[in-house]
Length: 185
Image 1 (cartoon, one colour):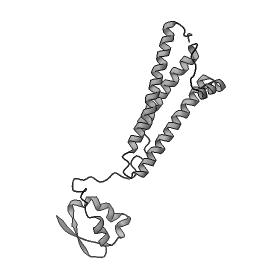
Image 2 (image 1 turned 90 degrees about the vertical axis):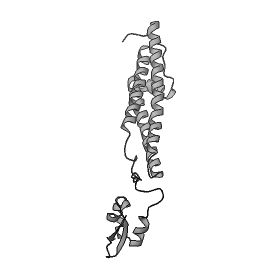
Image 3 (image 1 turned 30 degrees about the vertical axis):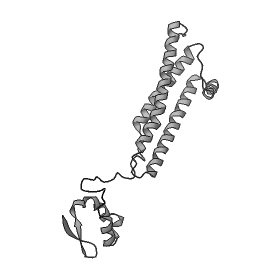
Image 4 (image 1 turned 180 degrees about the vertical axis):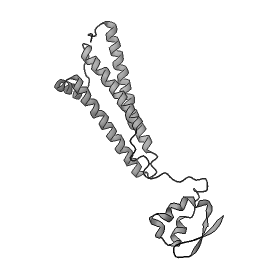
């Protein structure tokens, strides 16, 4: 189906109505000053587009959206790791921190403050790396469809690790309770 449309210099050009909604933005945006032949060339449908083809997502997809659910999952699993570690270190004799960097931090500032500082630093570091990675992927791939994958892996993998460590810490605490070696609060 075709109709006539007059452009800015009064010439009429045929317009295919099936595709008109897809090209409305071209008429009002910065490309409105193009010559009619350039507009026609740009509005020619490609084999992959058609009446049922949806417009491509905007280039900004996934760039500035912080994954709140991923950040929440990371925070909850890291806090459960920190809580079980802190309880074990403070109340179970013979329990020690296996990470030498964090162990030296505990010696310097104490277990509670050390856990708070280390947990905040880890959450901030993971968030920074994941969000920068998702932005870089979105810039490289203009449709941005891989940014959620970067966020899923970036927040999911550390969250799974923290959950596993928390379960391990809880099993150590339970074993200490069963043997009676836990010092009461």
